Amino acid sequence: MTGQVRTVDGRVAGRRGQATRQKLLDCLSEMLSSSPYRDVKVIDVARKAGTSPATFYQYFPDVEGAVLEIAEQMATEGAQLTSLVEGRTWVGKSGWSAAEELVDGFLEFWRRNDAILRVVDLGAAEGDKRFYKIRMKILNSVTNSLTESVKELQAKGKVDKDVSPAAMAGSLVAMLAAVASHQKGFQTWGVKQAELKPNLALLVHLGITGKKPTR
Amino acid sequence: MTGQVRTVDGRVAGRRGQATRQKLLDCLSEMLSSSPYRDVKVIDVARKAGTSPATFYQYFPDVEGAVLEIAEQMATEGAQLTSLVEGRTWVGKSGWSAAEELVDGFLEFWRRNDAILRVVDLGAAEGDKRFYKIRMKILNSVTNSLTESVKELQAKGKVDKDVSPAAMAGSLVAMLAAVASHQKGFQTWGVKQAELKPNLALLVHLGITGKKPTR
DNA sequence: ACTTGTCCTGTCATGCCGTCAGCTTACCGA
DNA sequence: TCGGTAAGCTGACGGCATGACAGGACAAGT
Image (cartoon, rainbow over all chains, first blue to last red):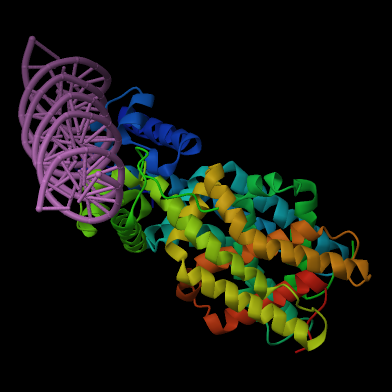
């Protein structure tokens, strides 16, 4: 599955090469957390990694290309987000804890990867299909599971027929992603994490089941 | 209130100056819609405006500075979003139409200004206070009104006490903003606008009132 | 030691950035 | 009508990032 890592000019990267390549990715990752995306320059990344710009261009076509690489790695890890929803039941008290844990896990994942996710979000919003695909890869793992949950509840007659499972799941996931990427903003605005999370969980529960949770 | 427009080196801008300044802003705006933020160069904007880069730097410190200007203009227009919520009642059928019209107006505003809003979102997420303030200026007009609505319903005992009005309003607004900026994404994913809007309205209604709407 | 293929960097042409001095244009009062 | 003054614009320049290449350093096998 994982085709060999290749340089831009087609050579196969060996042990040493892969190491520097990874070091460049790590340094880029750090830079993205500490300075605005627009100001991240190849030369800075290279300096930070103790190498030269030419080396960078041996492994990546440009900054964007390297970012895509990081994002891809993250997306692979992010697939495990599915576990936050799959095999969960949405009735009674366990429904409430399902919502709570989904919110928790989501915010946590976003906080851990906020720098890259910011850039992915931008790329997707700008219409770049490559970024859009990655964003989907991450969100789909959760969205699809949620969609299934809604469909099941609908089948049992517990949720109105005129609810579109996909739209509902998508909206909720978009909400979680948005709130997560502006967590600091909420704090500045006077809303504490402690009151934010239950509210998100409440909204998720309301959206999926259509009913208030029993806590 | 509106202090005279000034150039970077302190001169007062006259008629002609303000015209070119505005032309530069318009061209920048266009560029933002057609190419990724990272690739927007001063020289391109200047060329498009039929002037030289030096002129650009007479009116703006850099690209970011000019973007802030555009965003500020948009934020002023955006203040009218308040009217989507203020003076609305959330009971019965009018509650449902309130939710519908809020969603409609919000998505429409976002679609009209998506290019700049993308950049503002990025800047805010990156922690830039200037962008964050602008984002707040736009969203607060809606968020504050919604917060009030929830507080009122709470006072009447129609909404649980343990709901934090600010957190709820903020989350809903964040959701609307997120969905709006990825409208195209939803379509690609197979969710149509027609089913997206009612779902968002439903979520808004559920969040504010805690109850299903009567349509 | 020699060969082979990987890995890195010095160097260079190109192009954008951001600034300045200086030229042109518009306005205004005498 | 005629300067005088401030606004408005640009050519030109040093500085830096980009991206390509050729050649040197290095490790591993023979």
